[in-house]
Length: 150
Picture 1 (spheres, rainbow, N blue to C red):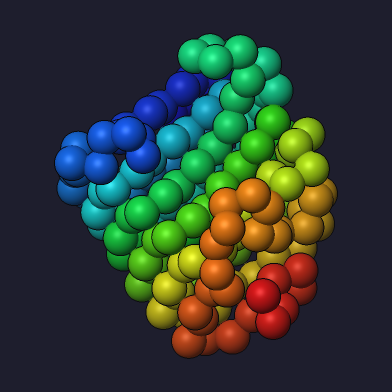
Picture 2: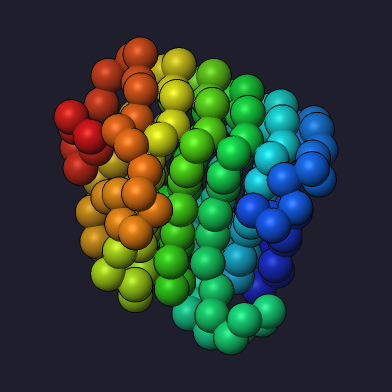
């Protein structure tokens, strides 16, 4: 996905909508990336991106929720309203760095099962539970930075 793009697949309102995405999900300065209830083979690499205002709800956000991801996940440099990485199962490392969101309970990184490491640095606010009511992540490869012990 290119600069200013929006990609939305599935939602919490439509959990029966599922997909298998082969080759991974990649974006460079996309306005908003939202993937729910999917299997992603090939990892995720979201670089940059900005908002905070735009369609469809006059704010932008990134979210990866309720997915099975086979490969490394990198979310780096997003600057929008809110961002979540919630209830995913990841077979690979997760790197969540340099993301700034306006919502004080944004950057929610919770209730994930990560078969690899979880590294977080330079995020504002720091990764947190926010209002998701989520639980601690289960990480088999260790945690570091802002996600240490989280």
